[in-house]
Image (cartoon, rainbow, N blue to C red; front, side):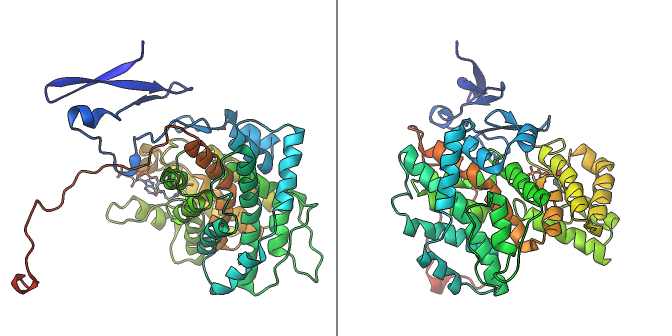
Length: 431
Ligand code: ACO
């Protein structure tokens, strides 16, 4: 028998079906509640609302668990690479050798931007924010690949995914080069995904450029850790835009815009700016902690807290170790790392943070690694976007391949003025 829960309203009982997930998560299906009772549920910020059933990623915030298609993030971080993880997220299984080669070849063959698209860079001011350029350029891809904008069969989806995953890296590198007035560098087929990203960004035509193997691996690992995180703000945006029938490129462009905010993917930049401020002597660690706790101040400790994790974010745990490793191999010293460690230590022993279960999130340590390898601050969220792209594609595919796809259209409780008449301008009181 199907499980139900009963709610009482209007002196009547309403039986609502219960949906149970693989890990025994329980959801109440309220889709018929308004039609039957006149009530809607009110949940600003969707803190307790499931927007879909999904088989891509599982998180358990209380236990600090993250799994892509059932595989723990720690295991993927140790054994896999970003392109394999992209395949896993988009297609649901780890690729065999043939699938892997096929997709790698497609990435190589689709790395170059259409020359027409390349000219768009000339229209941006040199100091344009790279997230603005990225969102605009990804949307512009729909003009150059109209057939793939609404991919219907697996072959078309694979091609669209290859264009996006390969060209997001080229767009990133070109926007960086444009900001510095340096010539665009084209990718080399023999390089891995992460290596090509660094090569296109940091090499110059007249100089030999080599990336340290540990740095390549670190960037690849960072991309794996960011690849999906179920119904976060940007992914929900991608799914919401997709629900209207909007094309893949437009939906992902909207996801990039959502990621840009400082409460989401922009937090990695904001976290480093906070550490820099402490280092400059303008503020000290204790003042920041005090400000974060002050209810009359909207400031929040950047890179701390998470809607889902009420325990240490497993990605932050891996990144903390990784930052120390990268610093060692590059013989890099950064006073900001010591400040970050001190900040974390004080926060994790402070009753305010303990009571609210606030721990470092993925954005707390990633910026320190980016800094060590020379990525400028305004490009931190761009690296996040490159990593998150396979997840967005997987969610777009899952949402649009659903025969029961409904346009995402929440309701509201109206609290504005009651019905009133129109007053001609001559009769309106002056304010
Ligand atoms: N610093 C200080 N206090 C915080 C912080 C923080 N970073 N995060 C949450 N709190 C407090 C809130 O003020 C609230 O306190 P209250 O109960 O006394 O009112 C309580 O903890 C619960 O916070 P909510 O706002 O309800 O948590 P929510 O799930 O809505 O927000 C968010 C999650 C946005 C990540 C929040 O923790 C935050 O703003 N963190 C800083 C920005 C950041 O690091 N964002 C990156 C998140 S990870 C990602 O998107 C990839």
